[in-house]
Image (tube, rainbow, N blue to C red; front, side):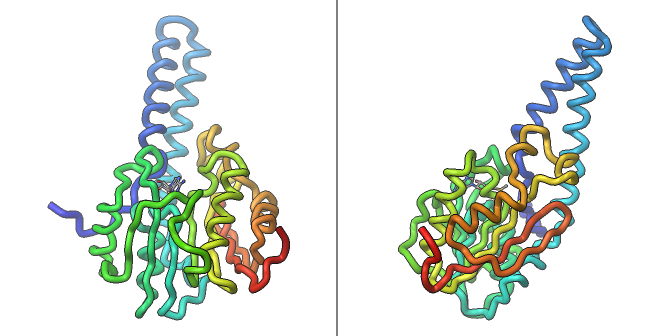
Length: 250
Ligand SMILES: C[S@@+](CC[C@H](N)C(=O)[O-])C[C@H]1O[C@@H](n2cnc3c(N)ncnc32)[C@H](O)[C@@H]1O
């Protein structure tokens, strides 16, 4: 039977469940058969990852995604790009605010990053939320966005850029978003920030991969964007940016 409620997936679940399972198994085996203290430390680590992941899943699901596009001041007739749309969370939130406009969500639908990630799931969510006619989901890499220059009025990107390894890839994705935005087009970037709260919610590996607010400021400036507004909510940074009429610097 088809679910009546939209479901936007669990971030990192496949990798994390393997990691938690292995850590608990190794830790408990060592504790019982070899070195008690050492084994319980490893098992404790597994439990810590399990707990922090559980809390972050609850927080992500309580996140009121619908609030975020308000930062964009959507008028209703815009052509919008959602980069790394996954199962459509942000695309659908934006589509709900459109009258004649349209959202195109692009993604490579990596199932390691998002459990049951697929364009079919994104379309099913759009159907459930009553915006099927306002969205289109299309295969597309953030590093090579399959659209011509100056195409979109607005762009959004939520929880993708931190996952691109290294600043070179982040800058490349930002330059692609810049390229496909029209001059004066707005861009909403949403990313978890490296802060104390996230230290407890992310696994240690993932925590060191996420950037601080200052790092984003530098990358966004390097990308040529003007920072219009910034908000911080529960460890997550919301950057409202603009592509200037004339490029600031190269
Ligand atoms: C953590 S999920 C976030 C999904 C969605 N934006 C949300 O907020 O629910 C990251 C998404 O980025 C996608 N992704 C990863 N690398 C990508 C790339 N190079 N180009 C496009 N999408 C990518 C993954 O497939 C995944 O759907």
